[in-house]
Image (cartoon, rainbow, N blue to C red; front, top):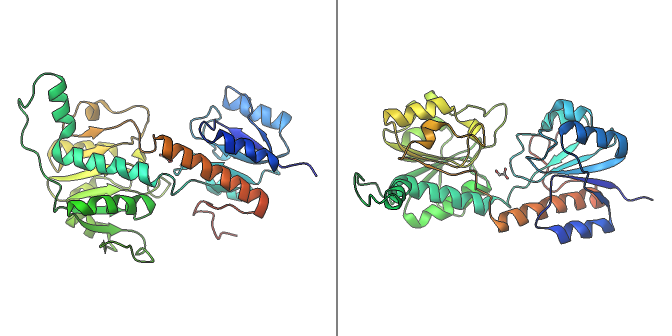
Amino acid sequence: MSKPKVLVVGTILWAKKELQQLSSIATVISPDFSSREGFLKDVSQNHTDAFALLVTNGSKAGAFDRSVLGSLPKGLKYICCNGAGYDWIDVNAAFERGISVSHTPGAVDHGTATTALYLLLAAYRQFSYAEKNAREGRFLQDFPLAHDPEGKTIGIVGMGGIGKALARRVLPLGMKIIYHNRKPVSPEPDFPAEYKSSLDELLAEADVVSIHIPLNEYTKNSFGSAQFDKMKQGSVLINTARGGVIDQEALIKALESGKLYSAGLDVFPNEPEIDERLRKNDKITILPHVGTHTLESRYGMEMVVINNIRSAINDGQLLNQVPEQKGRK
Ligand SMILES: O=CC(=O)O
């Protein structure tokens, strides 16, 4: 029997050896294309027998929306996404076509949580502004006193792997941890954390809010002026999830009005663009989506994708199927 065909859409840069080892159970092909149309043409001409795709966001194939998914081979069973966030794949349309989709939770936890911690420290202590002063030869000129994060209350919105990894990182700072999820975390976290069933309650109590929810049709722009209004005066917002979950105009207004003392942002709605009003705001820290930009994270993510492909071939199921599809019939 011929081996199942796996197409690599995008590049595997770090787990190259492990990708090669996949060839003992699969025919692994990296199609060469320079556009979305080129990708679809190559697949329809040469790979109608594809069994699984290993896909990376930002490849020339573009987003896997309903129309791309509709053009993929009928026999395609799996799409294994090299990333924790999969907002660029229409997982419901994939499900309707009988395609199971996986992502890479876990592998991104350390990198993203460390980024959130850095942003939190930088926002409270105004380290970005201080560094700018130092680099531009102004030393402490016009640099007001900042704030200590110690003893403050952090509100974690989305206590998944990244939220928990951040919680463990802020504990040594003596921060009180409250969190909001649809349901309390079970089993209970191995650190003190108070569950808030209502997001409004969390927003009213937290000194700093850190967002760790996926971007989807329900969460898009879900953090808007109503949510900023409920936050404490002079609070801090950290976002390492996706820019699209925050209404950017409302965020800019909250910064300008002083409702927010500061913010730490690693993600933006129209990456790689960053709104000029954010770029020019010295009081906030902005990063170019570096949450998982470490060798360890990237290697770990690639390993998760390859392990999902292996499991699909060997056991007929994914290890990390996206929650929207899990248990659905
Ligand atoms: O942003 C990073 C990821 O989705 O893995």
